[in-house]
Length: 209
Image (cartoon, rainbow, N blue to C red; front, side, top):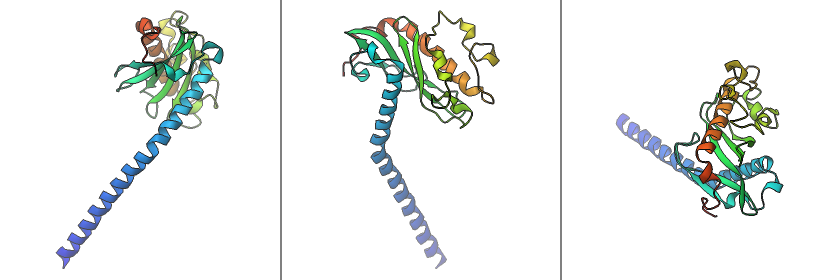
């Protein structure tokens, strides 16, 4: 009797586990397109803030550039985009991940003008502490705007750090790790741009969408 009860309970638990796993998988399948659509919409809004309409006459997503796995903080291949005006590449938008955020990776888009100056930086996704690390959002503070116009030539290498580390960028009261991660990620994006400038600015390099 006891053995039969144990078998019945085990079968019930096993069936419950299978049904739960199936439900989770189906939920992921159903919600994945919506999540991706939301991320694309967020990215589009961020790009519109970084690159003004006067600087491009084609959709950002029309000219994708593959970025190899291991670059810009991502373990998998990702995609950059060109902002073109009358066929000329005016700026490049790079996807960047700051893996050393306080609560995990912080996903950014970094816009860089053809001359190497930062057009702007925006945060797409993060898990930083509300009221502290979330000041990287434009709706919480203007801190992220401080990168616009800067470049590797305008800012000495040692200055690409928060003030606590001897650099020129402000940290937040009670939160240094988050801005430190952003500063390092933006510097890495500029370095990547410098190393890959010819490819990123080539009108023939992108896979036209």
